[in-house]
Length: 282
Image 1 (cartoon, rainbow, N blue to C red):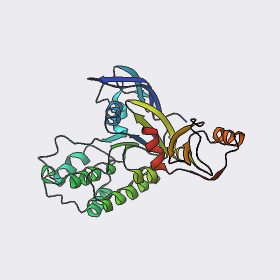
Image 2: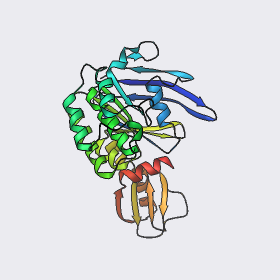
Image 3: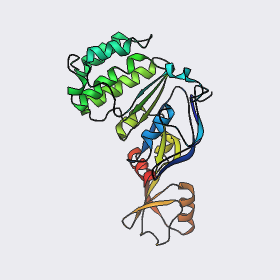
Image 4: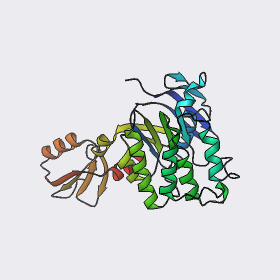
């Protein structure tokens, strides 16, 4: 199956920040989370995917089209940045009329359902809404477009906890309705755990790995040793906790080492997804 997004040798400089070069392929029908520390380059990457920021080098193909040469891909994609420009003077009714007329597959019932669920006051101007309510309206204006690909940059930012869970349920439902692709940049572990199929980790401008979620959940193993850890660095060691706990990303090699040196462990377990992502970003 061909990727819906294929990034080759992508490189961008902004002042003293360098993004890439790296390659990235995103498969259709999956939810891909782009995860990284603040300033790692997540938002810049998403803007480049939308051809809003030009790379210094590299190619981006979306739905097998070069995004800088053929803009027909745009009718299949919806993008929600962290901040929307130009919305402030309009109220929710006006924004819905403007946007719905641009999308022939607009789903009015989905829009009304989301507005009701999030309790959005459509008579209020966007610029007068709280940041959380702005985000809810922006999402209510996004999903009813029914794109093949949706790209969301920190979609639950500023939202209250109940609304975050509502949105996750809505996105799961949206994905199940057709062969769709969702790409989201997120810091929210619960969001990633519930929604993501694959996770691309970006650190200091480099994509250091693109994993299936379950693969990443098994990437690190924590061992409790019966005796104190040796001073020597152990195979795959990424972190120690106290004198008897070690975390490794080379489970087989570590166990072979421990057996050779007659070091016993009392327990081992894979660390949770949140800790695994944190260790990847150190």
